Image 1 (cartoon, rainbow, N blue to C red):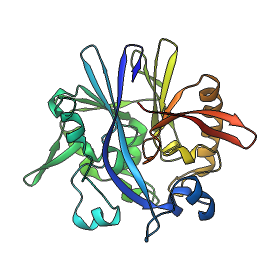
Image 2 (cartoon, rainbow, N blue to C red):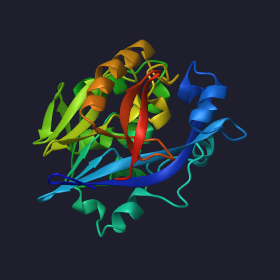
Image 3 (cartoon, rainbow, N blue to C red):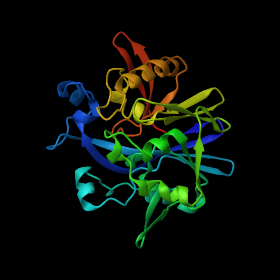
Length: 281
């Protein structure tokens, strides 16, 4: 889609699955299974690992990089990793791009399903996939990743981000602000410490990439909060802060993990906020 000067493309990097109960927390299965997906025989719901490609002038910027390809067979089976249809490399090549063309990467946070695609194996070494890219993450998030809570420690894998540090590719951000004119980051604290949402604005239009604040369209209602969140009450307060603005200004919200709805516009109704217009980027 074209948003002012920005050409924004949603890239599918894989399909995978996580436990539906963990994805919806205290919401009963008979509700979330109707709102999203009933789950497989292991209760895993179908999920996307959708990233953004934002292009303008001489810039080619990725927002997140998906799971990557470094997982062993045990982890692939646990998380139902499926690259039969999608991969980041394939998505880029379909647009006549390769990893060398990417100029920048904004990482919402460093969990493996968001930052896993930043590095790859080269023999016994782990090296950056995008050698010419400057990568951006909140400094609080890197500090948290290196000393995470017991709740999300398993989601941080040092091989996904320490090679970026070692190669001088990781720029640490400190709070809200513009990374580029028209592209701003907004750290939030419910899911993990200082995960940053990305907002792209030009010519009166805005797109929000909220990452795991609202991983699917079924997570738009305020009480629909993941069991994975470190601070679920904070997640609810963050939704209550951002959703009224998004609804009033008709922002497009892109859902990073939604296997069925790529993006949408939310409105407020009698039962709270919901997606009332679906959007394809």
